[in-house]
Every structure is written in structure tokens, then in C-alpha cells.
Length: 528
Image (cartoon, rainbow, N blue to C red; front, side, top):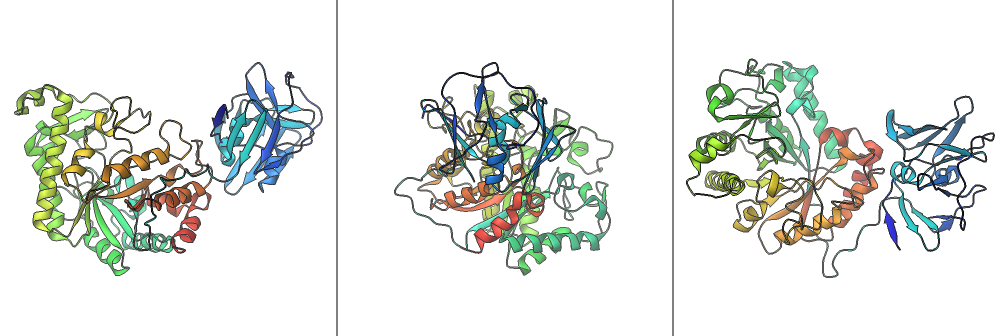
């Protein structure tokens, strides 16, 4: 094939409408369409608009073949297509469509051609989750329903997923994203009921581990002698919620036979730059010299050794006091965007004489990971210590040993997190890269990244968990138009013995069951 497109779909609307404005006719042989190997017959064939170089297709026949419902509003010249949880509205002459209430731009306006509503092929692919192939030589469009095909693994790979594999979910407390709800502020009973319901729903899907954010912003969802109570419990930072949420959550989680991992955001000091609402014992008030503000957010400066030790002490407070199964860090090291003003810190703390500030920053994060790892293992060696980095370590364009990707951000160059060193030195028990892209992602394809990470952990004692993005289901990004994308990712992972499990971001996105993903996970996990 001369060209392969992973295109999404919104579609098929080909409706019987009275004659309207015709698009300019192209010359050349007629374009044919095949859906899942069967030729689609239409009284109005696809055609190429020579002005926009866009292929338009009459897709009522396609949408109906896929089980979508199609209706037509004559007065407004609008076609409505509904498939599962997706509703699309397309109006003749408009250069945008409405998908679940949101406006989506089209490559060309919707056209009424000989009584058929014609829409751009790319929109069709994106919104209905079809894989689109275009063969120039034969002028043939091939459409495949379901997900983009799952690439084959190397021939010597052997599947490893069992019922014992980790099936984790991130539970965000920052901004009250997953738990607790703002409606529960100051109401211990309501917060506990919400958490019990969350666990019930997740366990019903087959989830066996929760990664709960216990340190959202240099604060705590547990009584601490070092940092203040989180404002996401009561609405006011430093205010006692009247119980120990962490103790309660651990007990409820373990009662179900599920794992509880304490998730720490290491260097975020606050979600904004305001200090007036911070508690008196917040690090930004006690040690303002440790704080760097970037893009209106406060960070603890990783270049200051005392600041790093303060974070380690806060984490060890949980390790020593609670029966957690793991300590988990996200990818908040240095911020990936904005200017981080640390010239003075670089001059003051560059004892190893790094010529490059980038290398110095990576050394700061390496020191933090190494020292935290040693402290956890000295206190409780049975606790798992793992980190979830951004999904791309480095691109091959910057490092021949990097992945064959074109990511605009990489964990090594932008967060200054040298995950490869952590793996090689054995400082972590597992890594959980956030591979938040589909198989169809052009710059960062899922399969390419999974293979790269499996090669990184191969031959080591470090486990590999894959971070998945159910929050993208139903969005316009390539590959996320059906929940089968997630299932295909899990199926692909199972072919690699290095992949020991999966994590999903986040709990709310599974509980909302977009495109039926919760049902799909339940069917998948309970069949293993």
C-alpha cells in the first residue's frame, strides 16, 4: 500500500434528501469501498474533492452496516447518527460536526450530493473507530471495524498474564478528581461510603489493586507530624477531617483481598501560587527558600538536598505507620513545561561539577530515587517501590537507544528522570510507564512503546506494569472510538512475559463506563 491511514470516523450518513448543492466532480476511475472484506454498494460512490484534496463518502450504508441508527431532519438539513454512547450531528454546508455535544472540525464541509449526505473520510474513521486503508493504485478504501489491528509480537514471546497479574487503578485526590467528592467535605461517614462504593465498583470490573494519592500537593490525607491535612478532605488545608482516611481505606481495601499502594506526588508544593490559604506548617510557608514557581504553580526544588530529605521523611512516615503494599510515585519531578529558575541552586549545590544543568538535574532526581529506595527497603523490605514515568524515555532522534517515536516531551529530557538508570541499578521494584496512546497514534504508537519498555526491563528484577488511558475513550484522538482499544492493549501486553500487569487512569473514568469499557474489562478479566 502506498499510504496507510489510521483515521477516525463520524460518519455515515447517507440519507435520502432532496437534491442540493453538488460538490465539484473529480475525474478518474470510481473509488470503491470495502467494509470488513465486503464491498459496499452505494448509488453515490465516494469521490475526491479536487479543491480540498479530501475524499468524501456517502456513509448511511456504512453506519447502518455497523449497527448505527441514522435519522434525518429535513428542515435543518441535519443528519443524526447514534452508535453506543456516541451521538453525532452533521449539517449540510457546515465545516464542523457535533459529537456528544462538542464541536469537531471537519476537513471539508458536509455536502448533499444526489440526495446523499457526504462527509470527509477522516471524520468517519475517527468517530466510529474504523481503521482506514487507502490504496492509490486501485483507488480502494478498505474499512475495518473494531480497533486497529494489534501488531504481532516477536515470535519468541510468550504470554504471561494470569489472574494474579496486577490490575490497578489510580485514585486521584487532587482536585477531588476520584475521591472524595467536594460534597463530602467534613463528612467522614459520607467519605467512607463513597470509598466503599468505589471499591465495590472497581472490584466488580476485576481490579485487584488501588493506587491512592495520599500526598496530592505537599499535604496528606492522613494525620502527619510533617505536613498539613489536605484541603481536598474538608475544603480547608490543615483542618482535621475527624478520622484517619488512610487507615480506613487500607482496611477496606485489604478486607476485599485487594492491594493498597500509597501514591505520592513528590515535588508539587501547591496547585497554584497562592500562599494565603496554605496551613502554617505547609512547606511553602516553613521553607519558602525551597519553593520555585512555574506557570503559576509551586514546586519543591529538587536541587536542594534538605528539600529532598523532607519529602523522603514524609513518605517514610507512611511506610512506618501503615500496612501499605507499596510506595508509588508519579512523574512529577521537574515540570516538563515553563522555565524552572534554579540557576542559583545549580551554583550552590553542584558539588559534583556537572557542566550541564540538565545532567545536574538528572543527578538530583537520581539521588532522590536512590535514597528513597534504600530508606524504604531498610524500613520494610517487603514494600514494593515503583514509579510511573511519562511513557517516552527518549526519541531515537535524540538517542539511538530511544524508542522509534516522535514525542514532543520525553521523561529524560524534560522531567530529567533517567528511568533507565533506576532500572539498571535496581532502585525500583517496578516501573509503570504512562503509555497513554493507541495503536493508531502516529508519533507514539502503543505497540512501539510497549516493546521498548519490555526490552528495558528484560534480564532485570524490575517488573513492568503498563499505564493505560481509559480517560481518552470517546475523544477525537486516533484510536479511542471504542473500548476494544483497551482490551486489545491488554491482549497485546499478555504476549510479553515482562509485562506483569496494568494500571488505569483513573477510577472515575472506569466508573463512568465510557463506550462500555467497564463491561469489557469485566468480561476480559474474569475470562482469564
